[in-house]
Length: 78
Image (cartoon, rainbow, N blue to C red):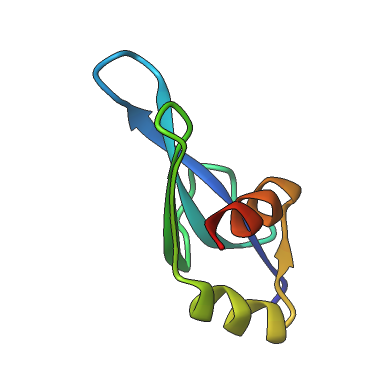
């Protein structure tokens, strides 16, 4: 089973701007499909990033591919 770590759009804040969860998916799942695990949160309007770095490292060590967006957010969260 190959997995990806990528963003999942979950809705809008009161001003109508989207926010996202950082989730782990099987490679064949759609963007809003069922995820294996949710490891973080990102709100672009506030610039707020919360990320469980231990779980991200766990998935990367086990062969997960991380999207470019999540890589950039992980750097920002440090």
